[in-house]
Length: 230
Image (spheres, rainbow, N blue to C red):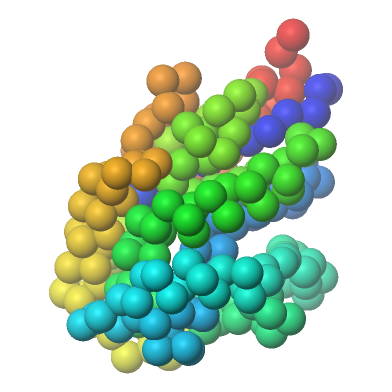
């Protein structure tokens, strides 16, 4: 079987990361969560008082990009790589609702996108990578052998996110999460730089009514077919 690059795009909370992690583990490929990188930059901005719901010091964040070092380190107990911001594990911190409410604003900044896209492309220079995000099949790896676009209804995605966060112990409301998802959908789809859109050669999967197992089997079969094709 040939080595390939697998790009999985889609709206927020569609289960991209869960499927991509398991697919990479099954194929023994590298997994890269591009969304975690944007979240880590957002966390940096929050920690340094560069962004909140009421302000965004975009120019200062752009100046600070040289100070931001991101890397992934494999956690054998979890079975996937966690993201580190300036040598600090921030895998848990970047998943909270506060970061979710601000990450789309940071992801709109062209300078941020350029920095992270360059790094993402380096991760996949030797193929054998599964990467999920918003613009992987259209910008990061436009020549990926397998492109998948995942979506589900906003209500389904909000329920999944609500269940995930409450299980973790976070104090959140369903309406708050639904509002955030709808807001992020709008920002991601309408931003000027690399808006979220389905690549012409991507395979569309609506997983609103699919179990995780059904989703994985579908994606795994697609990967096998792509790896076996001439």
